[in-house]
Length: 352
Image 1 (spheres, rainbow, N blue to C red):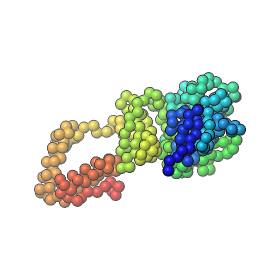
Image 2: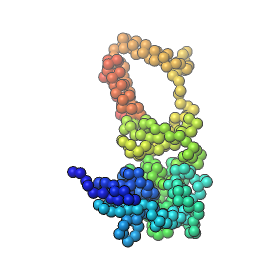
Image 3: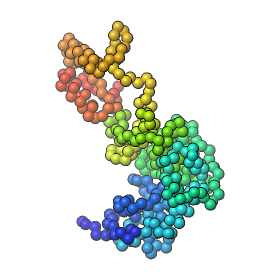
Image 4: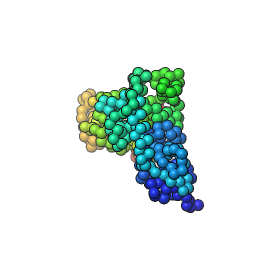
């Protein structure tokens, strides 16, 4: 049934679906409303107060991420009161921790930094808060810098609502508030599986890969979209590349993974540039491996397969495939085994 209901944003009447929030309608129509705590696919919390908008008839500004769109509602996203509110909130967030952009690995990919630049916040009139908790770097993958945490809750939502690992949550109250594990233990002693979803969700520099300070920053790399090779799911990812070396990996927001990655997909990429990696086929000659061309290697393999097949029969041959290649490549291996080698001896590395 056609929906004739409309919401008016900045003077423009716009249609909406029954489940849409003001923010949803704005995004669908290219209207910018800044967010910090909002995370796609999770329940809105309205925690950061950056997405406030002015709704005609409302007693105060409204959090657009949590307010449902209503027929005839009139919304202003850039009124004087809205801009004043956003500037005040950004200023408060900047004073809430140690936001040293010069030495922060999130520079270029920090939402708070982008908003401060956009709204021309050059400083803060509030006294800077002192770091209440020390930096945590005792696990193999993730640095937790509590001095930069703005308590937006995105990492908690990413862990609990998207990955459903339930390793972290908001703990304590007031000025002592903190993102904690069960028993407030380090991540290495918690239920964390180090998928890194929290790093990708963090809008500031409070969470980052352990080797980030040894790598180029976000703006210094080129993004190359590819498919993860660790299993057959086909997760889409971005390789952040500089000087032909993969510096970090992030999830690409499309099916089947919708931006999420596992610990292997996100952190297991050092093998790509390993000095021990074979870059050319090797053929053993007089007891020693020698470099060979692909044509030479494949011709030798075909010759050996044919000799074994004729001497011992097709069932003397077998093929092992891998979860680390694509489903299409596994299918070709299956067809090669049965149609060319004439055997059903094909298995998968998962059962080895």
